[in-house]
Image (cartoon, rainbow, N blue to C red):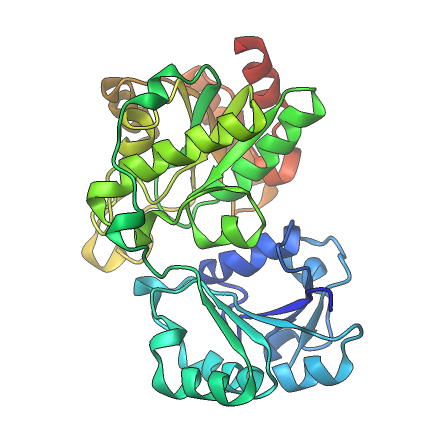
Amino acid sequence: MPARSVALTSGYFDTVFAKTTHGLIRGPSRFPLAGVVDPSYAGQDAGTVLDGTSRGIRFYASVAEALHQADPPITHCIVGVATVGGMLPDSLRSDLEYAARAGLTLVNGLHYLLGEDRYLSGLAVAHGARIIDIRRSKPASALRFWSGDVLSVSALRIAVLGMDCAIGKRTTCVLLREACRAQGVRAEMIYTGQTGWLQGVEHGFIFDATPNDFVSGELEGAILSCYGDTGAEVILMEGQSGLRNPAGPAGAEFILSGDAHGVILQHAPGRRYYEDLAVMSCAVPPVSEEIELIRLLGASVWAVTLFTRGMSDSESRLAQSMLEAELGLPVVRPLEEGVTRIADLIRARL
């Protein structure tokens, strides 16, 4: 039976925690998305609610409703949220239990492993369901240590980094890959999170399910595998978190271990504090400071892209023009205007 899936957001669709589902709606998806389970929007088109573009993906009130109404049948049930700490929201549990009883494949990208949940795993065994925990760590024997072989890869390597987490790095990566390909450039992407894997990106690893000692080696291995398999001219590396996010600093690995030639830096001009850290007044630093930090790490920022959630069009345009004047770099709003300007820049640097 061809794979068809529903993603669970159950009250989280309008938040950044549903970024996994948002990515699958925009596509692509390893398991083609037939619906989203969130009672808040039952009966509506998920693409229309997300960004005004109908994609034929319907909201359902429950997994039971989706199984009853969807045709062809649903085969996979995806945990469509990425929560703080990777814990399973209570609002998703009943639908996961129903999906397990129905014999669906449960696909989970949270740190909370469904395979270690006694009740859910017991239901899966009893009803012939399968559990795929994307963030289950590999054994140390299967992990790779950094060797330096990446230094001999001739493909242009670009890190798509962010000022913070949940800021649109992966979406920009996907759009940029497609824009480069449209210009005849052989571009590939290295995924580093669960959504990239769920979107069917072939090469990558799960950054935050990898012990720290092996992050650099797994990144290098993904680049070597990608280059060897595809002969890519451009390899885009999906960044994680932000260089100075105190709850989980990341990004230097892509510059240093991935030997990035350049950086595309994603910024949220409407976000004053790091995600979920406003109560501690942990402020996002100025973009100009981050660009200088990246320079000191050994790479240069080629362009800035904007995550404009919560801003009006006029507000985001003003932020864009002000940053371009301040930084002297291309500043692009990927979802509003595409990333052709950056693809042009990359092709020129090739």
